[in-house]
Image (cartoon, rainbow over all chains, first blue to last red; front, side, top):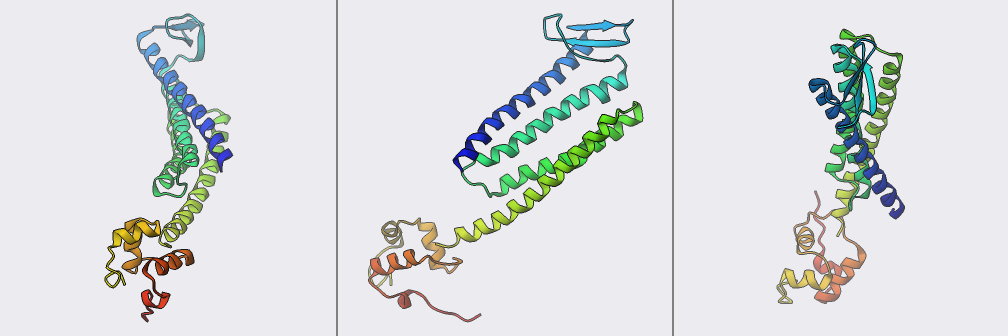
Length: 171
Length: 59
């Protein structure tokens, strides 16, 4: 179990970093697009590029139209920030003192509901305003399978909690 | 048995190495089971037999 705790702790820090990066990118992009700071335009304002703060070095690009910016740029960036946040919470479960607890099940529950519902909902909403890439459908399927896997894991943890409670009552 | 041996629950729990809360669970019958080493320790501390502290009550 020691190795699991070490690996899960490392993965937890990595996923937290990714979550922070995605949220930072979403925030930076939103500020850039609203204010024009660290923002470059190409092909007569058809495309935009977001630069690192206080620099002219671009790192994100997209079509400069409102539906794309909201539904295919800012929302996906934010949702992936949320995804890595929830993944981090699930991974953190594995280096807690007690594995089978109600709190840990709730982290799994949030993770599977988010993966089962949010991608489909986001793509459905986006498809009303903009044309969706084939990649979006693949991502929905991938996240759906991830959600189903987490659902089964939550069921195993539920069994674990019941067994743990019974074990705690054997003095 | 605690009264016979003039012992308090807290003292018994300390001697057994279990928490007062767990001892309370045993006393009130809420425990799902008891380990043999716990039963052995109780009998040793209270100088009694398992039958002195366990009772079968049909449902």
